[in-house]
Amino acid sequence: MDFKSLALKYKTPLYVYDFGHIKEQFESVQKAFHARKSLICYAVKANSNLSILRYLGKLGAGCDCVSIGEIKRALIAGISKYKIVFSGVGKDDSEIAYALRQDILMLNVESEEELKRIEDIARYMGIKARISVRINPDIDAKTHPYISTGLKKNKFGVDIDTAKKLYIYSKKSEWLDPVGIHCHIGSQILDLKPYDEATKITAELLKSLKALDINIKFFDVGGGIGIRYKDEITIKPYEFAQTVLANLEGADVTVICEFGRFLVGNSGYLLTKVLYEKKNGKKRFVIVDAAMNDLIRPGFYDAYHAIEKIDKKDEKFSKADVVGPVCESSDFLGKDVLLPQLNYGDLLIVKSVGAYGFSMSSNYNTRPRCAEVAFTENRYRLIRKRETFENLIECETECLVRGNL
Ligand code: LLP
Image 1 (tube, rainbow, N blue to C red):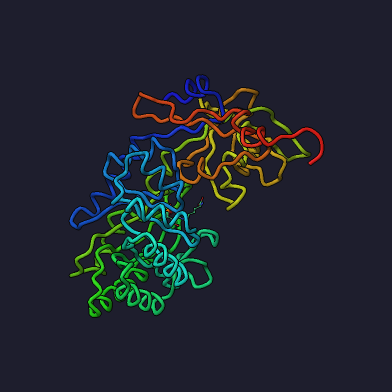
Image 2: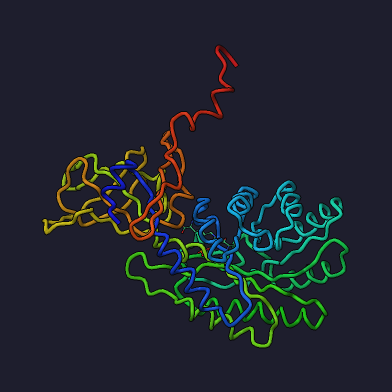
C-alpha cells in the first residue's frame, strides 16, 4: 500500500488496516479448529471499528463483548445474536437486561453475586438466561501483569469449587440455563503451557458437571495468543487448537475462542508526521503529531512498537525517542529508535497497532481521535472520519451557562 498517498489524502495521525491480513489470520484459526464444532468470537475491545466487525462477521466470526456498547456495535455490524458472548466483571442491570432481551448466545458470569443478579433480572423478564461461568484457574500466563487475568490475585472469574456450586445452583434454577464454561487467562501469551494447564482444569470440571447431569454445550477457551511485535516466538493457531483439543477428547462441545490481538494486531499501522527534531543535551527527540492519546500502549505497558521512516533510504541512523505533543513524559511511541535525520513533514510508520491502538485512544489534551482507513491489496476505504473539535465539545456546549453555577 502507498502509505504516503494515504497520509496526504487523509492527513496524519492516521490508522491504516490491512484487511487482507485480518482475513489470513482469521482463516488460520478457522483451519486450526476445522475438525471440531467451533466458533471464533472476535474480542471487540481489541478494535471495535464497525467495518472491522462487519468484515470479520462476513468471514464467519462472532463477537466477544464486554459492554452494552460493544454488543450494540456487534449487532449493528450484522453479527448474529447467537454468536455473541458477553464477558466482564461488572455488568450492570441495564446491560444484563439488554443482553437477555437481545437473546445473545450466553453471558459469561464472573461471580456468585452476578449470577444471582442475572437470575433476578431473568425472573423479572420471564426469560431463561443462558450463562457460562468464567473459571479462574490460578495459572500464571507469564505475560505483562496488567494483562494477566487467570491468577487468584486478579479480579476475574471464580475458582473451580465456587464454579461447581454455581453450576449446581443454575441447574436447579427456573431462570438460568448453564450452557457454557469459560476461561481466559490473559493476553499476549507466548507459551502453550498455561493454556494446557488451564484447559486441563476446565475440562476436568466439564467432566464432573456431566456426571451431575449438567451438560455444557460451549467450551470457551478465551483469547490471548500473542503476536510478534519485535522478535517474539509466537504460538501458532494450529498448536493452540491441538493443545486445547487434546484435553477435550470425547467431549461433545462447541469450542469457542475469543481472539482479539491475534486477528487484528499486526494488520494495523499508525502513520505520523514529523514536526521537529530536538536535542536536550545529548538526548535526541523526534517530535511527531501522534501522541499517547492515539497510542497509549508504549506509555502504559512500556510496549514496543517498531517505528520506521516511510521511504527509507541508505542514510545515517542514530537513536532517538519518538515523542508526541502531549504534556506527559510517558507520551512516547518509542524509545531509542534508530532513525535517520528527519525534517518537518517526513512520515513515520508505527507498526502492529491494529489491536488496542485506536480502541484505547482518548481525547486527552483535547486532541480529536484519528481517522481510520482499511485496505486490501491496492483498494482502500475510509472506515472512520477524523473527529472534529466540535465532536469533542458537543456534550458540554448544551450544558454551558453564563455566570456562576
Ligand atoms: N476475552 C476476554 C474475556 C478478554 O478479557 C480479552 C482481553 C480477550 C478475550 C482478548 O484477548 P486477546 O486475544 O486480544 O489477547 N490493552 C491490553 C490488552 C488487554 C486485554 C484485555 N482482555 C494491551 O494493549 O496489550
